[in-house]
Image (cartoon, rainbow, N blue to C red; front, side):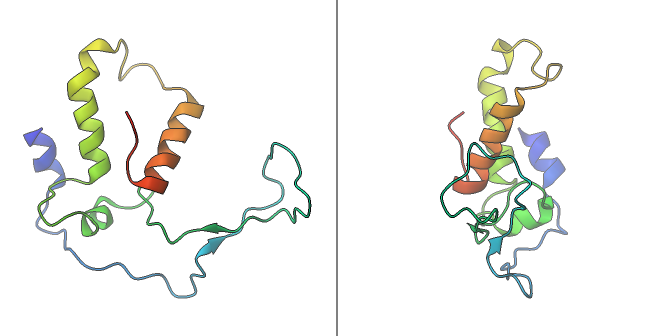
Amino acid sequence: MEIIKTIFLSPRLSRKKLEPAAGDTGVCNVPSSMPKKGPAAGDTGVCNVPTSVPKIFGVSLAELMTRAPPNATVPQVVSRICEYIYKYGLDNVGLFRVSGSVRVVERMRMQFELTGDVDL
């Protein structure tokens, strides 16, 4: 675990408050060409999903560290994944060799994005 802290902890990482980007309305527009389970009454093909929840995936480690508690040395998502691997890694065959189910991985990613944690 210490090596992971060493890799991700850098004196270059500063802890600053994140501000929304200029022109950010807080909603995202999803094109109507996206697959859906079925049409809803009055569906315009665009959903309004709040984007005020800070993203975890697709952002730099430096940005994640700006949102971490002051005593954290790695982002919470990295810590949670390392805890799981440490606890259950020896019981999983092909942990780093076999890809996970796309649906399960996407569901876990979305849960991390929405709640900041996932029940591993």
